[in-house]
Length: 252
View (tube, rainbow, N blue to C red):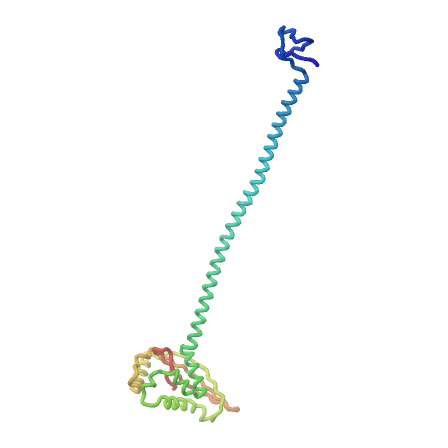
């Protein structure tokens, strides 16, 4: 195997003395050693390059893995904002619907209350007692002023119902079919209210006439039908608003 001087690189023949350097060379370098060293250096460089390339690929792979996550995270953030707006809108819508429902319940409750305890409700009870000739039922819903008169309360209401019934029974007799229709309901004027109070005070002296706040008149058309005969009359029902609410006041 050829050897070379490690100092000047001259090829050595035999022996350890370099013909050019004329010095004893302790170390010689064989061609295979040089080639092997060069290959080792190249392999190390290649290995370093390969390692660098792998590192770069790994970093790039990590970036490609991280970036989609970031993008998806950003997309999730964007998509999260929309549901927030939607949820806020739904909350407002739910509150609005709840308010409408509560308002509807209040209105219906008030309507039912006024229908039963207001002038219309009292008028209905009055005409039920009128049709059934229910004296006690009519007394229960009547004005308190009747308890301050000279006449017995039951006798007074019996007389009142008899007079009303005579409107139809004088022509149809008994056992006829009764019906009525409300034509109009309206409050009397202040002047009329004063006049009614004045007459009531004279007749029912112990009653505090100032308890009557308002009086409403219901114009009715009452109808009696028996066989093929039908009779229609006009009847006025007076209702008074007092401390305890609406009450039956009188017929006319």
